[in-house]
Amino acid sequence: MEKIPMTPAGLTTLEDELRNLKAVERPAVIKAIAEAREHGDLSENAEYHAARERQSFIEGRVAELEDVISRAQVIDIALMSGDQVRFGATVTLADEDSDDEVVYTIVGAHEADIKSGRMSVHSPLARALIGKHIGDTVEVTTPGGSKSYEVVDVRFV
Image 1: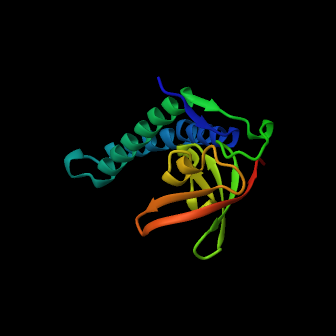
Image 2: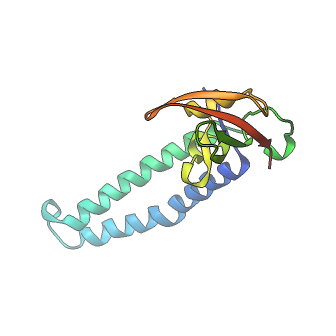
């Protein structure tokens, strides 16, 4: 069984979602199904079918979260230091073409959100960055063509 790397905050977020699904969403959908059944003919009851569909989604997400949490390998970034890029590093990159700087934190796939600056460890850019040091250059093929970045800073926050 393959371990899934994640930060303590990422694990907490998944556990909170699982708790909410089990304690709030699941009972609410069961109640909605019961109410929809009381309305009569189930074959033409849109509320019933919508509630059953929602129940199916919730049960699938619960199973997925339980699987991910059971395989989680929590990596505490607070215990890390150095100038080498690895899981948990917050990396400042300079685009070698435009000199624009971007900052990404390398996290597990289930906690990645590029808009928030959290990049999956499995992304092409993160894979290219792993093992690099401040001053190193990486080249990554993107949908828009090849991009070169220089590692400007590596922090573990």
